[in-house]
Length: 284
Length: 254
Image 1 (cartoon, helix red, strand yellow):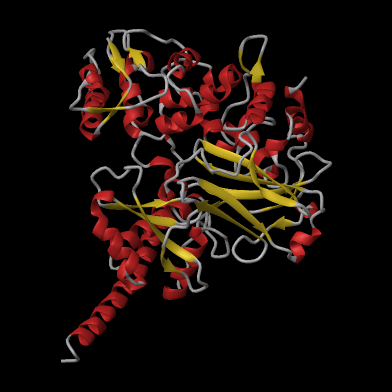
Image 2 (image 1 turned 90 degrees about the vertical axis):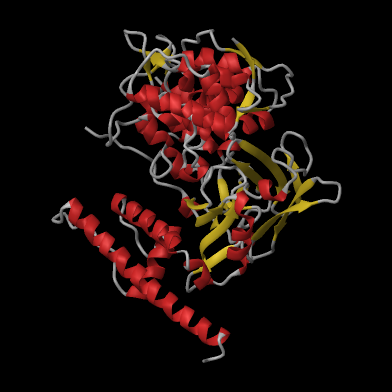
């Protein structure tokens, strides 16, 4: 017999997730002239922030894999500069002073109740300290595809590959191919998609994820955003497992969906190159 | 042979990989390419605070705890730990240097080579969720031991030639792996002090049994997933976190 399992969650008792783009909270790593990097947090006087109890303590976490720093930042009504819980300074020193390396770290912030230890009033999602350049956005302006150099050397001899984290697919460019990075970073969206392999790799991963757990256009993830973007262009949904379809048939239908999207993309690229030819050749 | 810790370069990694693939396909008693370890052609030095970071290839460590203790002396700080565990070349060097401990042999004395990522990172890094500290046998044991010492016995139990399910599951969520209070909670829930081993009957396939560690740690539906937003586990004690646990975990605390 299965007994009572997990508690219901407590989101209903919290203020909830804070906006870290423009309104509630922002965080910055400041590169100083002496080479040190210090953390700065800005808590804005918004309605959401005002609901949080004045004595709730603010905790900032910066993390990248095994490197982590926890900072306390005072309370909601008396915020202070971030102070590392071990060193007592606002220096970001568990990472490295080089922006491209500490930039991979993500920050998140919580307002924690003063009396009920650990109880969180509000929180932010984890966000990279330094955003990767966006090379493709969806119709709502959200990033669909990022680009980053391969500082960790994970690519070996490959010139590029597409990697995935919870937020975006990213074109990872081999450090030995500097010019490729510059070209992609400076070009427009269609130019990026001139690499049909990139789009195919993202769609392959999307289908793989979809076959494991159906992807919804409404979900707040790169999968949801890519699915919505693709659906808007070809007006066709990803096939779903209705319990009657054989797995290989479902896979074949997904592949057909991918081909439909890539055909649309190729037609756009053909049109774009015709326009470019017209412009560069003066309409002759 | 005694070798000073270094980083295998791409050519060194490929030579080691070729040895692994050869022996995975046709197990043999071939000696691992230890000559790579000190070769200027295949390695670059790794400066560590400890100075002479020597590793002896002939000494056998039987358990993951022994393996971790043996390499932990190399590391003096969390920054060094991160540098070592983020490097594909150092991870591969450690795997080669400690190969006789981390690879089993069959009855005929031939190597029983396991998954390649246990020895050499697959190159995909953390983006796929397969960070070196989770997959590589040596780096996995080193990371959790350096962070928590013997308190991490749950992750360090078992033969040195494998990565236990506990180690993989805990290593998958760094927010748990890095937090000493969460490690204490897991130890109090899942360590069988009487028999000096993890409690039995809490593994198995989905649907997981009540109180299983996968139901605690899981990032999508587990106890951790339900509460990591609404509670800040870093500011809590183990008792306070345990007080949050629902009924399904109570039998583990009796």
